[in-house]
Length: 149
Image (tube, rainbow, N blue to C red; front, side, top):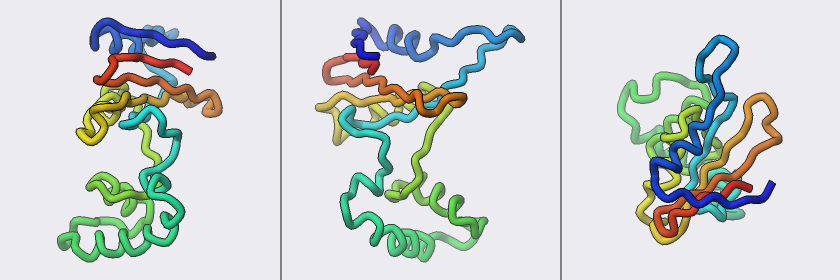
């Protein structure tokens, strides 16, 4: 599906993201998960993948150094996924592709990076029930455009 929607305000943008129907139990529960990125030209790739071909060779030393300088007890689990998630939370590029059920959290990541104020961000939306139906939703402060592809 290819169409552009251009909201006049940020409130209208939020209304588009929160267009969620009531469930049979009269609750608002979305099947969607969201991923915000700072540049609409980025696909569904991790921060580590965006570093280029050397990505696979630098993750291990980056994670090792992150864990080396973490304070005692700062990493309470030996599970690799936990370590990667914690490292990513602190800004380390990892192979983790994180999603959220909160559209406003995705909007934060799409719009908050000051290095990308001159380009539109994007919010990827995927239905948890049918993950192959991902669509891209872009919104940027530069042009205030909303894209649904």
